[in-house]
Image (cartoon, rainbow, N blue to C red; front, side, top):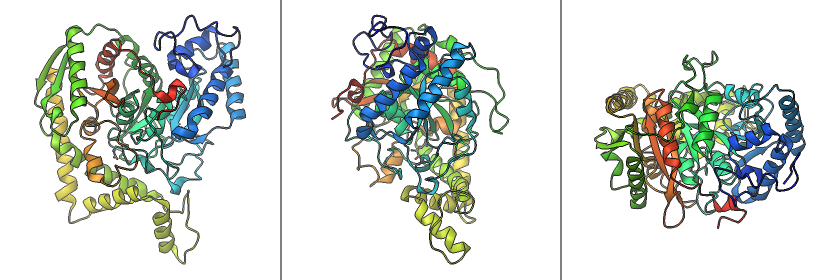
Length: 516
Ligand code: GLN
């Protein structure tokens, strides 16, 4: 490790409120906010943080494969020095100044390759940065790389990437979840303190649940999608993946806000999310949908989630079961709408404007056909075909229109639930992370695994995943808390109060050892 002003071990006695006394091996073991505080106070320099981050990535990346692109060491250090100068000059004083971050590879970064984990964009270098990236850079965050994901964010396992499979830091034989599997694995393995992901149908929350870290999908329209390579435009949002709820609040606060470059972004006053981080949840009304505990959900997950209900009740929350109708329509409606939008969004990848182009062709149509056949993977092709089918003249009303109607009814069901409850609680996933190589054989089963996450996207709601225990085999389980639109505050409040009742559990990969 590398320390600037203080000699070896001087920051050890303070340790981390978050991780406890004995666990600190690297600066990446701190939360983003803790590390930011240490940088601000001069305990450690931005270069110290950058070097620890690069070391941590170097150490576990061979096992985890969380990154598609790692920024060159010299460049990271150069930028770290520049950020340090700005901090010293008083130009940067925010909580994320100098803190290393990894960005999901469907979020554009100027001058840094952005692939969407697809062959078709394997050499694409964006000429501009996504608004969220510029916002983080203006705060002084230090980008160290682009993380692996399912191709074009379609998937639940990070196995459909053109750049290889990411492993779960808790058990290298399991998937990290998807599609933001690289971001969740990088945080879980303590390669970085935080990362950005995107969530179209659960892609922040599900990998967070599988990897034992915390992530929030914000309300639709609250974070700019400018520069997020589109998959399901009406469903997706960028959000933070971090070690704890406080980090999520701070990062979300930094990236949210109206953006004229995104016509779906909403003009609202900043909500002041940090004020919601109190442990007092007396009188908070929590609804638990009965339908979320069906027979398809693993008993250990049910138990862990019901245990969380007990804990929250003890802390003063008023918890009640209720019937949230239409749950069984969420997955089919989601896959129809998401595929329809994907088919349309992905039509721009044709080998003409940018990205990969097939080598041999005789005419324009053959060039399109071969480029797309060679450039896209199987799952992406399946979605484009499904999307084209449900939008085709003869089937539009039967599928797409019906899906839109279901979406509206689901939103209505949530609206009436939020008249009674501040927060809705349930599992994130019906099972823990499956073994690598088992999911893609049965895509329908894999799609059904999204049962608890997709509704928040269909209804535009904020939803967080927080760790709530391990199963018998030591795999993490996630607890989901959803709020009404623009009520991130109650979601964060309950999540924070719950998190405070538990110790942070470090993945084996983050503990310096091999996962399995
Ligand atoms: N598993 C879902 C899908 O494949 C969710 C993906 C996402 O949120 N990007 O569509």
